[in-house]
Image (cartoon, rainbow, N blue to C red; front, side):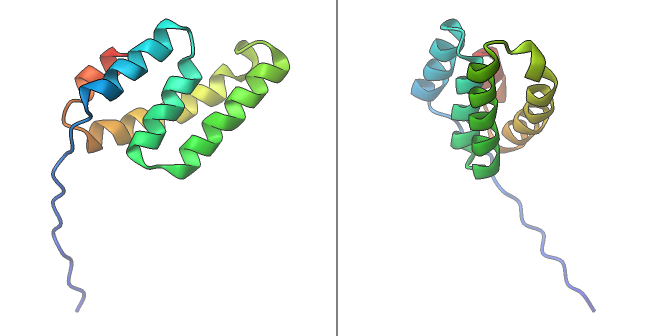
Length: 96
């Protein structure tokens, strides 16, 4: 018989200083850097790496339009994970 444990994880709260940093990055039009920072807050190393790649491509092409679909796919995963992990997700999302 397989026993399943019910593990409830309490949502964490992102500090205001981190939300402010996200807002500053987006205000400076560094949207990919803001997403990378949020991925780091979540602790998702693969997403951090993928946003690094998006940044590299952005610099190479000098245009985000060619890679916006890839970033949108990453964003879906990023924001879904952030919503499940952080109790103040509305504040986080508002920083973007």
